[in-house]
Image (spheres, rainbow, N blue to C red):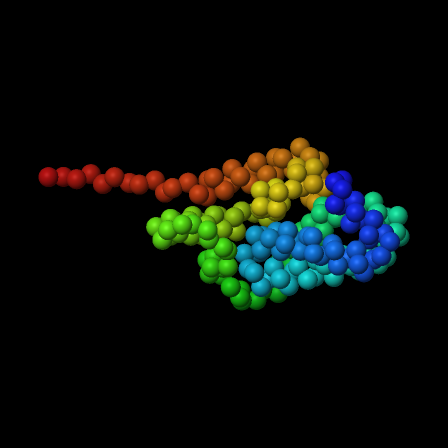
Length: 196
């Protein structure tokens, strides 16, 4: 555990409210980014993020100070966020509702730092293809890819969130990337024979 995480867990152990405020400040962006990438909707990510932190606070209130001090906050929060997402998917499957914002329209929410209009158009198209492909991945591949490549978690942390061995987490990420590559391969062009 690094110094910042240790300071955070010490604060959680001594003063829950101040520690929780700091926990949200430090990790809200990563939790939102994860939920946004797996859901494809900023509004859904906001709702699921609130649920994640509500569940985290409820759990922390029940933990003894010594247990709060031993937490690995980022992996612990991402585990909660992944479980909130899985529960949401199960509930949505049982009670389908119409989607609020399609993945394609959510592209406008992502910042674009490209210098010119031509590059901006190419970047937006690439991003749209990537988000569409990521959404098409099965959940058991999408979550590890997002945790490792978007959130920046180590394979050990991904394994902890997924509740599996490190080798399994590596395989899940690898299979997810292979699936993305397949989905992103350019369509083969068919040459028509020209007769004269």
